[in-house]
Amino acid sequence: MKFLISGCLLFLLFACGNNSEFRDEAVLIRVPARFPAVKYPQDNEPSKLRILLGRKLFYDNRLSAEDNLNCGSCHVLSAAFTDGRATSIGMHGFSGRRNAPTLANLAWSPRLMMEGGVPSLETQVLAPLHDSLEMGTNMMVAVDKLNADSEMRSLAEAAYGRDSIDPFVITRALAAFQRTFMSGDSRYDRYKQGMTTELNENEIRGMELFFSERTTCGSCHPDVFMTDHSYYNVGLYEEYVDHGKERATGKPEDIGKFKTPTLRNIALTAPYMHNGSIWSLEEVVTFFNSGGHSHANKDPRVRPLNLNEQEQKDLVAFLQSLTDWNFVQNKQLLPLVK
Amino acid sequence: MLKRVSILFFAALVVLQSCKNEPEEKNPATFNVVFKTSWLGGNFLMEEVYYDAFNNRVRIDKFDSYYAMLTLVKEDGSELVLQDFLRLNHVSENRLSFVVPDGVYTQFRFGIGIPRDYNKDQDPAQYPSSNPLSVAGSQGMFWSWNTGYIFSKLEGKADTTGVEGTSLLIPVAIHAGDDSSYREVESNEFNLKMEAGVARDIVIDIRMDKILGYDNSNGIDIATEAITHTSTNPELAEKFMNNFKEAIIISQ
Image (tube, rainbow over all chains, first blue to last red; front, side, top):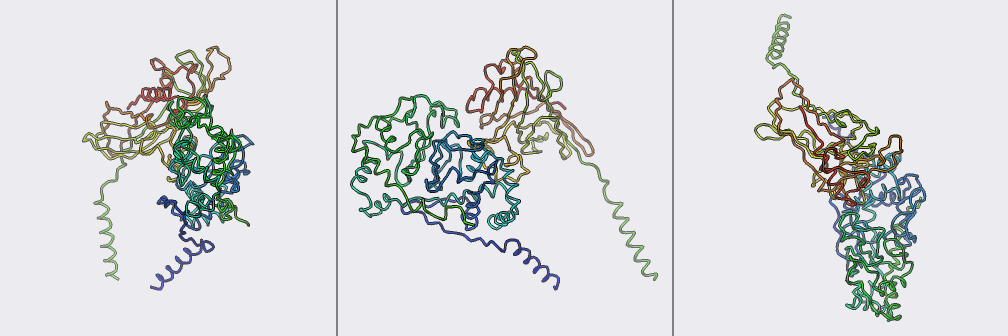
């Protein structure tokens, strides 16, 4: 009996000893008003430590080959998690192929990447890590580097019950943090909630035009996400260098199709289009007003709109009302201050 | 004292008796699977230059493949899965040993690639590092931007002039994946009697010349088709996987 009690005490001492500095707890993440609930993966329900570990990893240079890049290098909060470049700069200073997309509201995105080749935020983590034009590392090398850090190891154990950092921990933690990037508190949102003074006359006219049959902008960029999460060819080119969705499917009818970007915080995410080839919202509206270039796969809704100058200004004014300043100034999404 | 000696004597007797009754331990039956590569009947060597059917000079630097569901089928139809997934780089001969129950086996089969349920949209981070499908196990054999495994990867350089001594400048990169690329290979003329203490080998010979289409109407002419990531040239990926299946000879 004496031995049994001693054994139990010893077990308890060991059980508590490893992670006394970290104590995890479930967290309830409030989604923006009018947004649906998030469906979390069974193996990655949000918790305080999972999100904390993800936050640390998101800004950790050890996830890049040369220890000089992290996720936040190309996804800067003040630019709604974009980087203001046409295409991002990756390993060795190489330029990437595409414009860095915003990371807002990915918790609701059914598929990731501009061709939709990735099914979950967890799996998506591998893409920039392994891409030689982005972070260019090998996940297992990053795992080794992080395992040399006892604090990260302890955090991994407390958050996920694993005895070390491994690909499971890295992919889950980064996804858990990114699912907290929720943006739904723009002036437009407040207007939709009944605060009618939030939008001025120009913005209201722009909004009505945006969701009208005349422009059909809202059919691909519907409320609340301002994206339908689908893939279209908008006639940006007659011949595409980057074939978009066709890269993944091999189907000719997918050439030039890219995932519809959300327009939330769009005023902060210039330049625009899959390759960052259009530098201002005014030019984007001009492009769509023109009806774009001819292409066999172009969506028929992209056609000459014949908008006058004032109508184009109204559309731009509406798009600018989609900025969520609370989101881009949320300190919980910035690197931890040591 | 006498009582103690008696007890010890009887205890020793019981122990001796129980040892005597124990059946004689035999070594279990061992089934060895040997994967080897060849070129026109001779040994194939990585980084060696060969002439293909189109008189191109080809040097293969990498040939990495996944195999799945290595299975023995007994004469009563019951199946024994020896290994679910296997990744081989074919730099040298690979020998795998399996302990199998006694019996007569009439079929051996396996897949080239990864079956549908384990391929598209799967997360390699869910597997422990020892699993060939894990992040560690699938290094270089997983499309992270278009989630799925590369079933077979053949890389090298070629020269289409056919002139000895000319530099091999044309890159060859055939990366075949996607669910439609999965191929099943089976050996039906197969009769393997396994019994305790016996080791039997089968040899899986992958004829690299046949993969490129030697003596085959589906020959891959490096001069015109040398690169595919499957979706970029699905026809070449399909031809490659068909040739790969045809290139395999299983012998006992």
